[in-house]
Length: 310
Image (cartoon, rainbow, N blue to C red):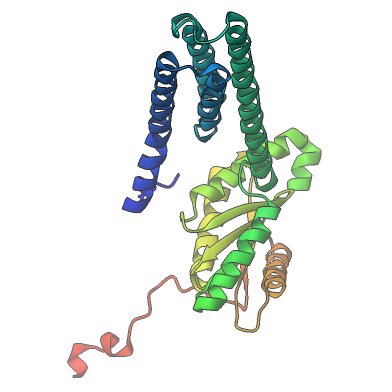
């Protein structure tokens, strides 16, 4: 997996996020104690439930329902303490009891509202995650790919940066499913996804489209560099993944965004390049336009001349 080097700003955000909840929790405790103190030295009556309810509602800004339960329980306890320790004779005993009961109801109802809001937010967050994450491989899915492509396409067009797209397909996946069963096919899909994730940069984005097909967005990457990465991926997958006597292999098609392209055109070109890889024997990388990889670095002609000829 990739090691991540967080910037100072990112580390600062993590710091504030980690300690913000603690600071808010402390502020809630102080507010609760302040309301209790005011309750003991004054004649709040029914108004006692209002400030306690406000403090309970303030627990909405602290993650987790446990905080809300704790603050609400403190509010009930402090309300009872206020009943026994508040000055006597300021109002009829029946009115005091009714006021305290109503205060407890205010705290209880407010706590239930806050807890329901928190659970709803948690459910919405889970749904958002499930909408963009493939449940089998736990990487981003096709919906996330469409969103990511739209953002990177706009950025590449606006700032005139390179953007390459690789479409990857597991060779012979149908044969694997028929021969070994779909559960083994799913295992292969997960292993290939992990291998792909390990062999791309942290600035690139991996997606599972459907079945055994994946996509990679190579940000600020030309077609030649993307092909070098694709060649390395093909070799590593074939080397590291096996199922019995069968070597697991992938075919890759790569296209790079051109000036006249829209999103559909560059994706179609990558799909056509993938078909070229499949039709030419599989376990290969094809590009449109074609790129011939040069393993040896180019050396200027002036450097290759013999010294004796000078």
